[in-house]
Image (cartoon, rainbow, N blue to C red; front, side, top):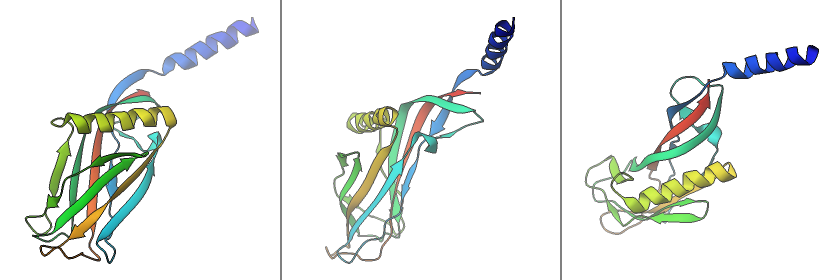
Length: 171
């Protein structure tokens, strides 16, 4: 009799939670400052707990990759060039060609997974690895030069990586 009540209570409690899929984001914002040789680098570690979802959920059960894009901005000046920009996620690198700056303070859209299959697979693999290992180690690095090829020291080079996810949650 008591065992029956315990089982009924457990079923009632677990049946109150409903699993649904919602949209989520996992965005990385890097704001390194260039050294005297123009080099910049910043490292972050991201966890599934860093996923932002729309609405409320008791817990995140799983997530899958939808898309990603990268933007660069900062106190960049017209004529500057970002060279050797690399996004390294857990030792796997995505390399960018030289990035010219045309306007002071410009926001430059570098890549969007909707139109670049190589980048799509890079980020999809990275998100899947996070699902498996429970974290991501992300390093962004590169060099900033002015229009004359001289190193730019003390400049902020902001690199923003925006990731859209489907997130399975319990409500």
